[in-house]
Image (cartoon, rainbow, N blue to C red; front, side, top):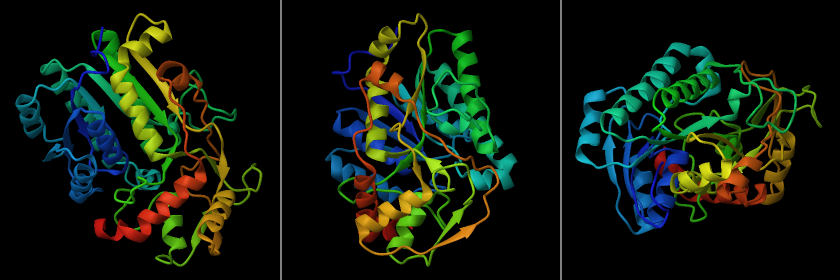
Length: 352
């Protein structure tokens, strides 16, 4: 059916491997003994993160600076390596920006994914783990969100994730030799415990957690709380915050345990969808309070109108990942905050 046993090292292509989640996953792959080839256009990431990954792992990876839209350059990478699997992280990812630049998101995320899959087919690489998102659940009112719920999206970013999922499902139906795992994760936060790699967005952070970390260490004056009259415990939005290191480990398990996961699922065709989250929602104000407890300093906030495309809340039902991969989120929000602050204070400025 699929990949070899997990005690054998593999050569794995990681798209977007210099980014926040990708770099942590590359480190975990290297530490697990796998050979890693990274492609990244560095549009919102830094090559320095890959140098740090190699230093932490004590092993080398191979990096190619290129865009997935550049099919000839990507083909050269496939031709130069006997790749066995692909972890696909690459793509534009800011919800707010996607609302104002929908064509850029559709072109980049959809076309890049299609070209990647075309080359995988051409070179006989049919093992893919796709980085999807909880945004595919849209405005679901029932929590926690489970994999069998109806899908929709409230913004172009989420729609690109949903469309790519549908493309991959159709691809598998057309050719069942493809082994595909769709990982829908919620809100990755924190940094590597070493403080050497973490989230370093260019310009103003689009996501709450890195913005809040910058406010905490006085790099920004205050946090704007977008929306204060949602139907939640305190009127602010709810999210399921997942430590990025837990998330990286889930991706490695998905790569290593393709066969075992499908056997546990009891399905004939190797196409699986799994949520990755903690199963516990945190409001914006609760997150601010948690930052203040960990950092020991007040964090100024100001109320602001809700942003276009935002949803009230999202909380993962992650029982399937536990059953199929033996994976659960282990690190609490306080650890994620401490790691994020350590990263912010020590190293983040080097990568901006």
